[in-house]
Every structure is written in C-alpha cells, then in structure tokens.
Length: 437
Image 1 (tube, rainbow, N blue to C red):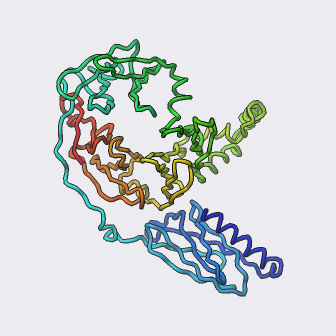
Image 2: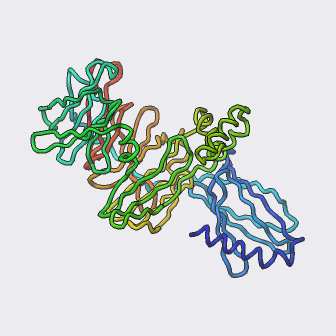
Image 3: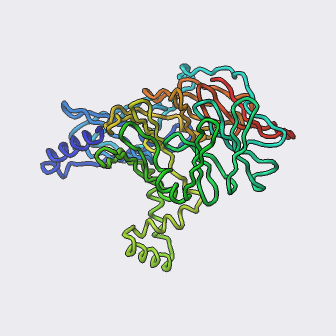
C-alpha cells in the first residue's frame, strides 16, 4: 500500500512538471553503504516532501535509489533504517548527481531492552544404553514418537512410542525411516524412502496410514496450516528464488493469493545464467520453453545456477496465531500480518537476520504449538540460544541460552526447549533433553 501511494504521487509529480520543464529534469542516484564495513545497505527508507505532499520510498536490495528532480528546487531527503542512525541530505540543481551515503550503525548499547535469562534446569526426557535419538515428535498428550538407531543411521532406524516415563513401544514398519514430520493436521508422519506413514494413537493402538511419498510431497506437505474453512499453502520450489502463499476456501472452492516472496538479487543472477550458457544448453532450454511454456532462462537457472555456491534456497516462514497470519519476508526486511481472510493488518521492519556471522543467526524460526509464541534460533561458537520475537513489533524481546554446546534438532513445546545432545568425545548415546524457558 505504501509503495502504491508513492508511485501514484511519483507519477503525478512527473506529469505535472515533466512536459513543462523536461530540459530541467535531473536524475540523482544514491548509493547507501555501511560506514564501517563498506557493505551496501538495502531497504533504506527515503522520505521527502514536495509542497504539501509527503513521499516515501525504499532503496533496492543493493542499496541504490534513483530520484528525478526539477532543477530549480532544493529538496531535503531523510534516510532511516532500523540498524543505522537517521541522516538527512539536501540536493540542489548544482549538486552531484551520484551521491554516496555512509550510514552509521546504531551503537550496541541502544539495544538494552533485550534481556538474557540464565540457563534453565536441564531434564533428560529419553536416555538409552541401546539407542541414540535421531528425530522426535511431541504429541498433545505428552507422549513422543522417537526415531532411534543402534550404531548409525545407515544400518537402519527404529520407531518408538515413548510415554515420557520408562515404557516404550516399538512400531513395526516395512522400511527404514529417514525423519519425522508433523503435517498440517498435527499428525506425525514417518518419512521413508518410498512411502510416508501417517501415525495416530487411538487408546493403546497405533493406526498407520501409508501414502506414496510423491503424493505426500505434492498434496500434503505444501499445506502449512488451516483454520475453520481455509487451507493455507505455498508453491515453494527449492530450485526457484520466488514463491507464493495462497489460501483455499473449502466452502466455495476459491483460491486467493496472499503474497509473493522473492529474492530480487538472486532472481537477477538466476536468470542471467542463460547469457553465459553454451549454445547446446540454450537450444535445450528453448526446446523446454516450447514444450512447457516456462521461460528458457528459468530452465537454465534451475539446471546450472542452483548447483553453484551462490544459490540459496528461500526462507520466509508462515505462522498462524489465533485468527492472525504472520509472514516473515526476510528479503524485504519486514514482518507482515494478515487477517484470516488475507487482508493486510500491519507491517513492521525486522532486522534480527542481519550480520549472521556476528549474531549466529541460523535461518530457523520455531513456533511453540501450545503457547503459539515464535522463537528464532541462533548459534555462535557452538552455543545456541532461542530468542522470543514480539509479533507486533518484530523485535527480539528475550534470549534463552542453552546449557550444552552443539545441540541438534531444536524444538519448542509447552514453554520448554527440546534438543538432542551427546557430550563431546563421550561413549554416551544421543539423548533427548529439555530446558524450561
């Protein structure tokens, strides 16, 4: 909405001045960099006023911004970004056309509102002298499905139902299981090489439904969540740097696109791979374009660029909290909240994913299925911590450090953080632990 207002105002500004003073129109190019690291800073807010109108826009992800201006006017611009001190700059008809803005990072002491809690008491959930825990799923009644192995995972895995105390029940399946996953129905699914097994406990019995793995990948896994009448899903493809979130209304069978996620820089590199491809590859891509209707550039990007070290899969998680939907768009530095009908309620900036080498950001958000709180996971020098995110402001409120180093498979459930851990250079099997947040 903000961009739309800016564009309407922008074209109105041009239409009222351009034809009358075309010879006086000057384009100013701004580039924003970090004063210390000299790295470019994207998504900088640019605000300025002309007569009685206020305009607001954002720089590109590469930290660049272009502005046309009538030569006779002086124009004051204000620059702001959540991680840098605000600045102002006045451009004139005799000033420079290419302007470098060095942004000064906000000092660390400005973040004093973040509190760090002392490590909680560590409880051992599951321990065994026979098995190590590879994966786990926590059910609403406090029981656990555990994926365990004796020597190593290649030699085969075993699936256990554990009641949280001492007893465990082995579940026989016709193939080795690779991992466990909770689907949109809050039902545990065991993923094998060929099939997926949906597990459900009814009294003392375990009901098992077998699905073809491809069917599960295509029709079940893309569904993220549901409410009374809608299914929320995405068309995410790990080999393409853009995807959409949709809702499907089961009452009237209508589809609605909620929003598009795209890494603009990655998309530019992805499509430009076609320019450097050899003739044989280009011919193959053109044949595919004729056959499927998908651009030849996309075929080459998916075939070649996704195999390079520069390609990164998109990460923009979706969460539902009561009747509100939250989408973390890390490529535009924003957290957008929607109503259950897909209407935008609020947009706030987020910056906890910046400088991952310094912060230990692991590109992992975790939702507690009981409290519905959302946490970010960080790990630096082997020490991990979960950080609670305020969904109204997008700000990290509190950090909870974990006691052990190099933990695996972190989950949050019922106000506790769970993880798998084995002491370094120890003969102990991998146990399942939990700490209270």
